[in-house]
Image (cartoon, rainbow, N blue to C red; front, side, top):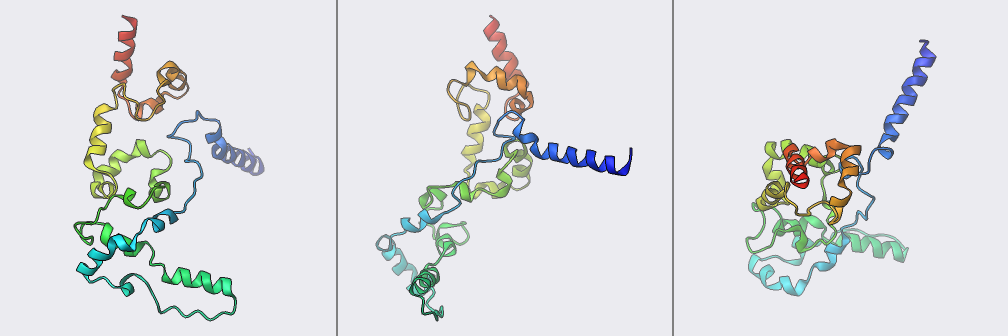
Length: 209
């Protein structure tokens, strides 16, 4: 095979590999997450100064603890000055996370759950939670369980692992049993990402009886 022909074959192969996800069965293991609004701005509007006034007084938190007032804004453009002022005075996430974050920094009474302030959790997901995460999460969780506990309670893991071979609908639609065989035949490996093989065998044996 000539060098030019080999280059063409390699190029075509790479293009096919890049596009193969579009032709594989649509499942949550192989398909990337759909695009979402990456903004976490809704958390900013959940903050209430009045609700925090008592705890701030107790902890001696003053305005300058969170807000910066040293930004120099030198422009004649009113919209730009307004935008710059807003950005400079808004404390950002670090001020909130200092009290509501990890146990070594936060105030004991401050709730640490992400949903305390955030309603859109998609932007908060780590990069490794994208494609194939359910298949790979076990080894990563074993190596660094504390990283998981930043967001998940132990009960989250236990609940899923104890019930993964039950009829409960954690991941599938409620009518999935009616057409699960289509996905199972098209890509049986995806079933094994969560279910043990004897789960299928035992269920089908009961159906035959």
